[in-house]
Image (cartoon, rainbow, N blue to C red; front, top):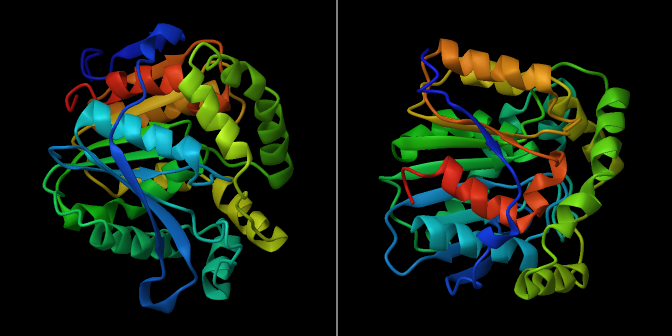
Length: 309
């Protein structure tokens, strides 16, 4: 494919990218589809929505003030209604992944977990009064990239998917759990660098401070191992083989250990061979934790969703 269709883009963190706090309304809902365990969801609705952005968050994500700020920005910048749920098995309620789903995950199969997640997303669309799925964007970060890709066959039935946006995908190479944990610890050590980029914006720092007072999500050791088994595979690459995409944006931090350069290049090559357009983006100086930098989130929203903004 010509480079014009999958341009290589490099982004340097620009704190000036962050403007005033968006005024988009974000509502929180607690979901129990078909009497399943409860999970929280956020729905951010701009004044005149032009479609829907389904956002699949990363590991250990609480849907408190920090994620509310992100969703408000995404909705404000794109005019899309943003919908996100907690990850099954990783919520403030602490309920475990159902045993049958966990058993499949221990075998490296993500599909049952994604199906469970979709039940909550569908409920979030209903309780949030979201109807505009004729223009559907899908965004995943880290673990959320794997859930997003596994959900694509079903999401394609909800409405035409205009674009897939994968930020720091992890399940793009096979490795053992010890290596996965070592790479995770290396990237956690880079968190302070990402957080430091927020310092010049008081409202962003306030959102972070408020988040620290909120309950964290809880998960069991056995569920943690099951999630690790899924992320230590090439499930995301396999999932992309089975779907047709109109566009796919990729994002990696230049210092990331969880999303390594060679694996990232291979993923880009798979999309190129399939003829899927979209930018392949590298964020300079940051690692896997780049999604905790609000300036980067703002810059990536423009770079990934330029056709929507």
